[in-house]
Length: 584
Image (tube, rainbow, N blue to C red; front, top):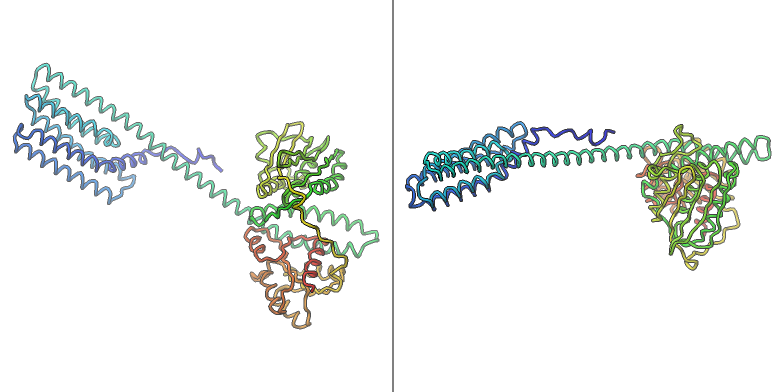
């Protein structure tokens, strides 16, 4: 993208001229009225001191000139000329102004007399109209030049023709006054042109900023759409792969080939982590995550992080120390743990020697959760950049083992969602510390934990699965059969209804993909099944979509929502929950 300076070229001269002429015409009505008022004052002051016929004749010509000026103003407003016509309209009214100035000069020449009072009136009015006009006519300098020279020139000539030291001196002073006004008019014009150029440049800069914002927003939307489409297409086969791997894990248990299944599952988990990073970012972007705040002991979260990363740290020869903490916090435990997990994962990933410390420090009514590392550190000018999506330090080759560059972007989004400020201090070559500020919670506010059910609810349970991917349906049949469930697998709501009608099958739970063929959705399919059965069968939606609009639609349905790929443990937990929900 070009810099803004390259997108705002020098303002064309015709654009400045257009603005100057427009300003000239905007100020013309006020100048017209003031000129008529001055003309009437002159007639009244000279009434009885100058020939009446001449006064009335002069006033009549002034009125005709005022009419011409008014017609010019009306013509300009109706024509609304563009840049190409601006100069012509400027000269058009400049000649009218020149005639007006000449009328004042004629008055000074014709009505001149030896009466000091008359000379004083003429000097006062001619100098006054010339000085007052400088502000309004300098926008189109020829207009002021013609007006001022026409007004002062004949009067100065008459003073010179009268002779005498005093009158010659007055004539010289009058010409100096004219020169000074002309110079002042030029200075006003230069300042005006500079102001017009600056305003046009600011307008063009603002327009360029709007264009860049629109381009950036469109690029962001295109990126989101691409990620959503790519994520959905990847999640379908990965979901099927995980289901088939769970089947193999059961069938090959105790055989020499079972370790291979473990390697496949490990690779699948790595791919699932990458896809889930994309999903988390899309869910934050779609604003479908709703925090569930409650009080809980932070020690449980810290304990899980210690167990999760101990092996990874040991494999790199790093010390991992998790400091004990007995305090309770108020937050969403799942989202807060995700923030700390991403920070800890980054610390382990980018630290090659030394160790990582995860601990807490109380700050008034808040708890500061800190992740310290002895990694390479982050230069100060990049400490804001690392929270942008897909930005990674030290990974130009885009090594998948170093992630996608979404971890800190997700941390930043979740922290803003929870209103938990994130701070970073880093020392290049020595290490970094990320800190999350969380409000303290109350032990009394903690909810009671329900006791888990002892029996396996999937034994003999009837499950309806609706998915338009044949491979996923096949894997679901086999996996659910291993769990002792009865399964009907259908590719659409219509297939499901036909199967239910043919076999008298009444499902205890429905699991439907959100996006089905023909633009249908799993939400619609569940509602059709419920209507056919005549009961609110417990149901859930699974989806591989990460498009913000799709995520909002799916969440708005009110059904539990899981995202592909789903490992066997999560799937079993979900189906067990649904089956027990439908029990009397």
